[in-house]
Image (cartoon, rainbow, N blue to C red):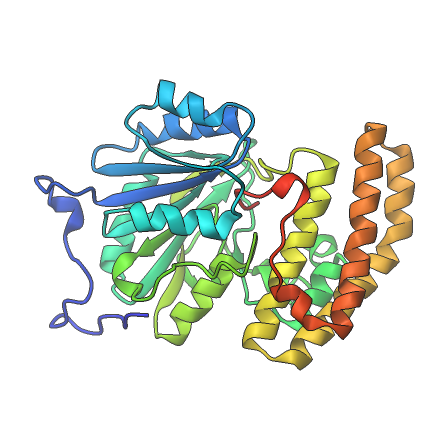
Length: 355
């Protein structure tokens, strides 16, 4: 990783990119990974059209079967489209888009977002002012206007306890029990955080000296967390910036109970891999034990909910099977932690965007 510029005499960070309107290169490259979110992707690309000139948009399609690629070709011919023959996972697809990007700043953007007109320009301006910042995330809102939690602390055993036993969800805003999501902090002020949600994840390219950008050992979830941690170790900051805002349709790629259950499993697996990689086997093993205990304790409640929810029988069966496989995996990983490093894919190789 590159080191941050510390004073006005250092020129590690490109300055004045917004003012250089006559340059041939774009001032920001937007990378969107897509998997079967055709209509959401179209709305996202339309919103980017209002963001102004100087923006390069790159869509990496992970073998969608819903006509996403054809829609991009037909309706958005200026977008650079990279099509994969199979679903390579989020990390590998992002790395493809990042390698093709040409700008000083690269924005990783979910396909299930709508970008407000000034969000990209304001974020670039913030990075140009904050010369020791490598990553910035903006304020996210649901479609109904509510603010989403979009900043997180690095994974920890304590954080696994809070999420596995739903303490963060039950005690939103608590300093202690919502600690891992900064639930007690205001969403009105800029501040340094451990990591920001990958739905809107803007990177200063000068901070990245090693490629690939994301560790491809994470199939989906925790890749950006890993990157923020590496950048922090190199002396860079990750910042939350409320001066830019987007709408995030949370869970755009996890549209069925089956995919939602798989996404939860993928998230746990990514966080555990992070802990084994950066905190050592004791932390990884302990967090895995917590996750397994949480799944086991919640299983009776899930079965009751499945019975009373008006959900298709096929989806219910698939979700139950995934939960059983998830518990079996976490129990097996207590004895064989290397399972977290093995190549894998989700149902139908699901996975494109986060959240």
